[in-house]
Image (tube, rainbow, N blue to C red):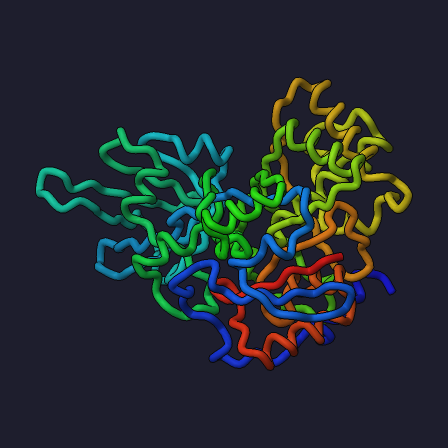
Length: 407
């Protein structure tokens, strides 16, 4: 069966509302951990994760940082417009550092009532320290708006403006307003590079104590960056996955990490991904290398991974280290110290994951592309995993518990 013919109805399950974790636990690493090894299930907690990861493994995390991307702005008549910043129209790092104005692709709530003219918001507490942000529509698209933001004083960067006036964009299934605790708890403790509008939630369970235990077991911890887009919450509304458009996301990986991955695979060291975003980035690196082995002179845009590349490229017999070496050689030849590119990769049953031996991940929504990714790793056993979690008090989705899948 072609991957495009996968029926979404086969990846549904009944998730009661009360099983969705609306708030995080008081202690991050107290979250329950479901262990899946050789088709067997057992339980532990994240505080004991190091006991379950092979000694000497390479463990990779996504160090993206969630930006306060939700803005509530007032029309001149007093009505409220909600603006959700999806991604900048220019390069992310440049737009976040801009002074005075910045242009973004956005979702707009209450758009029908926003006929024309700018909307605005203010911040600051002292009369002589009231600052203003305004937004005007550049273009109205079918699925998003292009919006120009302007603010005074212009000495502030757009990152500072968002930090002052924006709200953390919680997933819609939490069905509540963001609170002060979410500014800390909807970030991983290692969040570093701003750009996500959703957290890489598998990492929310990690604490300094967990990291210390992992390092004491000679487990090497390193980081990639993939800026998570709002499309991660986009439900699959089509009957088959072939009619679903996967969202594209930016990632950033260093040449040094590529070399570390090559060395790890040559030595047959276990590689563990924390989160589906980390896994999608790693598999994208492999597929990019496969592209270069076929066409060594590709430019960066042609190198980027599209939704169906994993199923259309001839990669079945290409070793990981050979593909990664081709990508490393391309970076060196172009004098790039880092690879910054987009991926639209969909991982679903039928794709043989190449880059990892284990995955830490949360429990995902019914009928989601993330659940398809889990099924690509464990096949029909995902049903047994999820039923066990439902039967044994596990908490689901972003603030919920998680699992460690050994492949």
